[in-house]
Length: 206
Image (cartoon, rainbow, N blue to C red; front, side, top):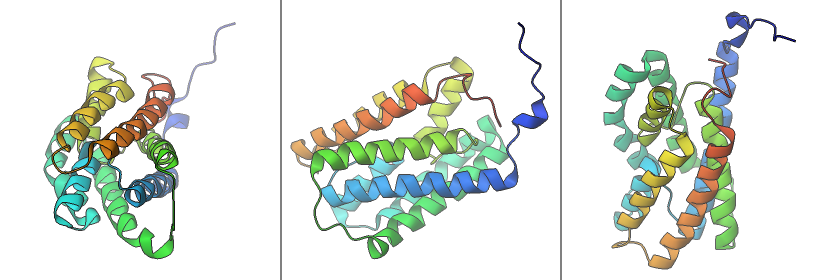
C-alpha cells in the first residue's frame, strides 16, 4: 500500500513547541555541562573552547560561551536563515545563563568521572537533538555541522566527533591528559547519540 500524502502544514512546529524545545534542550545540555565541570572534564565545539578558557584563566564559563559564539551568527544567517539564527541565539543565551545558575540550584558533592563523562555526554547529545529537530543549535560548530548535513548529507554526529576530538587534543597544554582522555569518552557518548538519532531525512518537521 502506498503511504498517504503528507500535509506540510502538519509538519511545522508551533511557536509553543519551539519554545519548549529550546528550554528543554538547553536545560539537558546545561545539566551535562554541570557534570563535566564537576568532574573537571571538557566538551567539544565552542562549549569546549569556553571550558579551556574557564580552566586556563578562571573566566566565567557562561560569558565565554556566549562571546565565542557571536561571530558564528553571520554564517548561520547566510546559510541557514534568520529563523535558525534567532533560535540559536536564544538557545546559546539560555545555556550561558543556566550554566552559571545551576551551581546555585544543584550541588553535587561527588561524582565518578566515568559517569560524568558518559552521563554528561548523553545529556548534551539529547539536548542537541531536541534543538536540531526544531531548527536551532548551540551555535559555533553546530552551525557548520548542520549546514554540512543539509547540503552534503554528512551525518552530524560523525562530523561533530572529528571536530570535537581535535579541540580536546588541542587542550592538552592546559588540561591533564587523563582528563582529556575521559572527556573523549564523554564526546563519544554525545556523538553516538547524535549519529544514531539524528540522521538526514529521518525527522522532517520544521
